[in-house]
Length: 402
Ligand SMILES: *Cc1c(COP(=O)(O)O)cnc(C)c1O
Image (cartoon, rainbow, N blue to C red; front, side, top):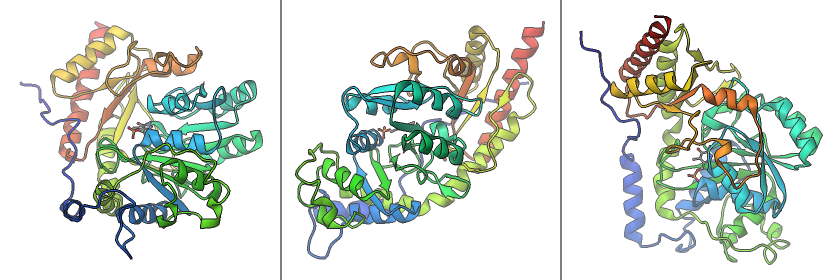
């Protein structure tokens, strides 16, 4: 019998919704794309997006910027992180995170990873003490959220400020609190492969008035910050406006218009992602040799990708499995590869950071497999994909036993 093959694309997103297209066309017809190009009584798409995203997360203030990476470097700079400072971060994350730390001249201090793919809080405490770092750029990598109550307690005790990288947790929550609302500030990405899509873009939220005033000036507001509506009170800017450099990274009305309609749809999209995730997870359960990454019941996830572990598998067997899945149309990413591939990368490939050893993270990455779940997949697609992976893992195990 012919083996079933999946023919969909793992990188194809859904079209931009019609309402967003209409809003974008209206912006283009107006000719006013720059965020400060407003007519009297017009708040503009960017400020509207900021108000709506602040409400969505429950934050007091919001700033829309050019990318998720820009959002992180902007917050670090606004916090006063600079040359030679040490910043804690996850050993398991994506390149823009250590990149944001390096962009302000600071040095990443990587922290170990647990089997839940979250930051190892005990190791974090040890490395915070040893390095003297005062800031943690916490990456909720692939949407895995650590015990945020415990993490905040440890960081508060150590005097470490927490900045959350929520590129993969927009719409997620920990224990009922939206992801991004535990730390001092949070950064989101609206790049094509995240949860709302404007090609490129980023958002910052915080309740800290002075930090947000600095971030707004940094983003390139000139002396037009008064036009923001999701900003701190105008007098907060008095102290900072002449002392804070302009490092332009604004969002424009076109992208904001596209995002507003998508933000309104996000809760429904999260349910669709989670249906795909649950289907794949169920399909991969009870497969010998394959370990599911169990989710904490306190997490409200956004299942836009799924990860599993192949503990103890040798490199050659993993490569064979990936090739066999690929031959049947299933695109898996492996975090154990020596050289960075596509969007996947490892802490030891960021050679601009001081060399560090993370044996626990190495052991986990050696068997960690990653798969995107775009919303162009149906739950039938998800079941087919899980069936193919299950089949090929079972085949590999039989082969090894022969
Ligand atoms: C995508 C991503 C970011 C930010 O990305 P930009 O491409 O700069 O918008 C940050 N952290 C993680 C983990 C990401 O995957």
